[in-house]
Each structure stands twice: as C-alpha cells, then as structure tokens.
Amino acid sequence: MINKEYWLEVIKDWNKKEFPQIINRDIKIDFDLDINRVFSLIGPRRAGKTFELFNIAKQISKKYGKDKTLYINFERPDFGTLDSLDLVLMLKSYYSLFPENSGKKIWLFLDEIQNVKEWELFVRTCLDDGIKVFISGSSSKLLSKEVATSMRGRNLSYSIFPLSFKEFLFFKNFQLQKAYSSSEKAQLLNYFEEYLNFGGYPEVVLFSSEKEKILRDIFDTAILKDVLERHKIRNSMLLKNLIKALLSAKEFSINKFYNYLKSQQIKSSKDALYKFLDYLEDAFFVFKLNKFSLSYKKAEQSLPKVYFIDNGILTNNKIDDKGRLLENLVFLELIRRENDVSYYQASQNEEVDFLIKKGKKVTQLIQVCYDFSNFMTKDREIKSLLKASEEFNCENLLILTNSQEEEIKLDSKKIIIVKPVWKWLLKEK
Image (cartoon, rainbow, N blue to C red; front, side, top):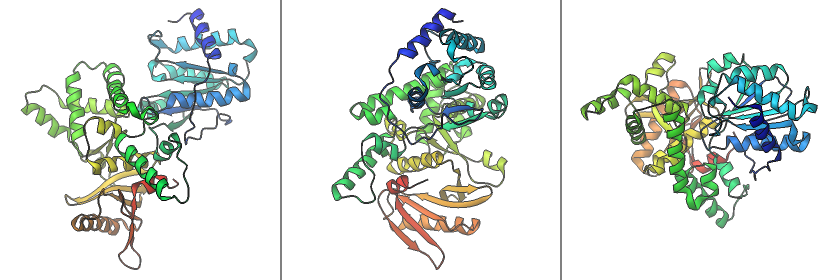
C-alpha cells in the first residue's frame, strides 16, 4: 500500500508537470458534459489513450486550472499491486493538498485502471460525490457486461485505435482538399502505401525512420504485458505458436490447429488454446469475424476470420500479401465506424468479405479486391455480391480496390460501385 507522503509527491509532480506536445485526433469527447457517468477510453497499448487523456486534461486546465485535474498512470513500476483503498487514500491526499477544491468540480484521469483491484468501487463513489472520472485501459473487458453491471450502467465508452487514414494524413501535415494537383495526388498515394504497409500506430507515423524497431517493440510489449504477464501464462511457446498460426491463416480453426500441434508432438489442450485466443482478443491484438447467420449460436460456432489491430503487426511479421493488408484496413475502418459486421459465405467459391446490418436488415455488402483488372477475379467477386444481394434484398453493393474505380450497371436498379480504398477511407462516416 502506498502511504500518504508518497501520494502527495505523485500529485505535486503532476501539478508541476508540463503537458507534452499533443496532436489532436478525430475524437470528440465533451469533458464538460453534465452527466454522472465515467468516461472510458479503451483500446490497444500504444494507440494513443494516454495522450488523449493529456489532451482532455490540458483543455480542462486552461479553463479551470491545473489543480482541478489529477492524472495517475497505474503502470508505474513503483506502485506495485493497488486496490480501491489505495485510491481512497490518493483522493484524501489530493484534498489535503488542495482543500479549496473540496465540494468543487474536479477531474480524475486514471490510466490503465485495470491494474487496480476493485477499481469500480472507488469510481462509483467518485461519481456519487460529483467527481468527473476518465479511465483508460488496454483490456476489452472494461467494455464487458460485468463491468457495465458493476458500474450500474454509468459508463460512456470511447474506442481508441491506431490512427485512421484521415488522422494519419493529419499527423503527416497533409491537407485534405476537394481536388488535388498531380503532385499532391502522388504524395497522397505514397502516404496511402505507407499506411497500408506500416499501419497507424502514432509513434510509427511520427518516427517513420525507426518504424520497424518501434513495431517490433509494440509487438513484443503487447504480448509480454497484455497477455503473458496479465494472465500469468507459463507456456509462452504455445502462445507464440498460436500467434504464428493466426498470422498465417485468413480463417482459423482451433480444432485444426490443435490436431496440427498434436501431429508435431507439441503438448497443448483445446481449452488452453481457446483461453489464449480470448486473451489476445482481450488485449485488442486480434479480432474474430464470424460468418453471418440469423442464429446467434450458429454465428458463434462458425469458422471465424481473423484480423489484426494494425497492418504494421502483419508486415512486422513478414506478411506482405497486399490483398490481405487491404482487407485488414477495411475491417479496422468498419470497426472504427461501429458497424455490425460479419462475412457471408454461400459456398467455398461464393463469399462476400463484409456484410453490414442494422438490426436484422442487411444494409451493405462489401468486397475487397486488391487488383480488380483480372476478368476471372472480377467475375467471381460480382457473382458472389449478386447472390448475397438477392438473398438479403440489398442493393448497396461496393467493391473496394487498390486503385480501380468504376460503376458497374447490372440492370435498371442494381449498380455496383467500385472504388479505391483510400477514397473510401476519406469519406465521411
């Protein structure tokens, strides 16, 4: 347990600390919103959650004063294991330092809060006392029903992912316009190629000369801290074998992978593999995309496709399949736009990459194809789209490519829009 003297030191350090240089992102959070809820910033490690907390704290400090804010990083190695009682002492220490703020509006910023035991108890008490609380975490379980229940529905969640393409361009000081000169368009396409291959982790974008080293560090840290250490995994080799298999497979079957390990005389269990995959999902390292079905049970039991949090993770692990990189980008953007997404498969040769629905209604069907110039490829993609279009009575049909653009008129009603991914990424949500 941390004593009061040390808390006072931590609080004074924050009060004297200068804010770092911050680049605004396309994230709208109203810190003055008169609502009695905790603001949760959730996302993978190194995606920019801490800097977004700093950005909000900076705005509050300008308007109300730095002493009305308190930021704590719960990954400090000197903190050790903390619980809700430590947080109570932290708050008492703050008020002893700033007694004039007692009963006034203050803002707490609790970074990587999942490291504190029973943190929900403390946060609930703060809300009851009218204290504004922002929390961040690199665990998707902060979004789970269990936490929503423990917070009694008093939670507003915001996902913080690596940069979108729009944010990437903003970080590169590239000005978006309605039309571009030939040199501006060439620069834009060069940036898209960089984004396609190396993704949108803020550090990678800002320090591109060191991007390979930074990506390796992010990959190692995400596995070490967010999976191995958090879940106290001893069999690190099994986890690494699982990640290697996920990287090399577009669709993934635990049963097939288990049988493969068995054939290689590698000891494992299906339960361990399912747990490890859940841990990777919890750390926002991978996403599973289920096959579309009106039956929830059938959808959950389908063979899932696997996508990764950032294209840089793929290229850092020697995945240079441009089609897969393009599809991964599209999936991440669909998640950013909070779509209800799955994939459609009528047969092995009839598949639509992304099916978007609202409620039970299918609202859009999307194919992703890096090179759409090949006749056989074009024929296959169109046939799959049309079959799904007829089955779901959906006429919003889109094929996303690396560079091709056209409209394919099939009859008086049906038109397939073919568009480069970079253009689609820059459109409004």
